[in-house]
Image (cartoon, rainbow, N blue to C red; front, side, top):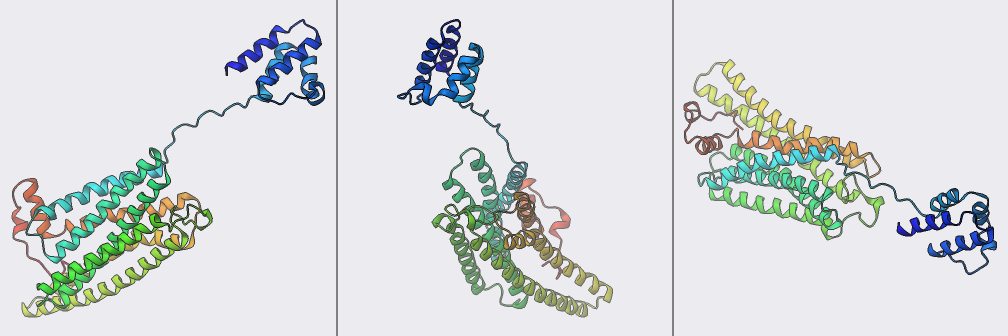
Length: 370
């Protein structure tokens, strides 16, 4: 900007001089701007010279500055999307809540049964999903680059995929524990559980690596889905896979509900319970299953269906509005699957206060506790 001030100062000093001398000064200053003045200035710059010959010196200076010097727009302020703040807050809550579950299962040797391994897998997946949401906020506003975006999206996709797969594995485990009640606590069950964990985490990691390995839309914006840089095909595969797993979970929970009702009826007959007691127990089991499945569907179904029909051209507010409930599922999972479990409750009480409530230690497991 120093040479602009010099330009204005020299033009003012030409006041009262002859018109020919004023032309020379203007041509000299135009050379300082980098314009080509090899030809006759009166030929190529007639439009500019006429304005400066007819106008006053102050008007000449302001006119030249306005027409030749581009004025930079003021730098935009640091604006944070409120939706990103909400997602980051959800990620923080998810991380803290599931970290407690992971630590309880990891540090308690008695919690090594197949059921607790699957609950720990679910908590670990949700914990990584929460960390991914936090990293996504940090990288979006502090460390913006394509590589960090690919890594963050890959982590979030892999974590949520592992979370949904862990929910399916827990459903399978609950079905087997009821259908094969006599042989459930065998080595075969433990081996089958480890195989399920290896498969679900292997598949989830592969899905998360797809954007990093090149299956993304960074080079072709027209193929982007509602979650950049995932492609539309990638999002469609994930959505269809979710719908298939949801259908399988629904079928398994229907079978679990039938088994629970049959077991409750048999226990009522053996102990000569009243029909009302049998009805209450059965209704409690069915209500528990309905809450589990209904919560899962309510959280994930909006985003799944939206990912199938929408693409990058849709307003981002719809993506945020459907993705946010999906993150809430990771907040609810510890409450449904971990903190309702009697063994985990005992471990949590021992860690927090070193004692056990009398009602918790004396509580027996009923058929409705599924």
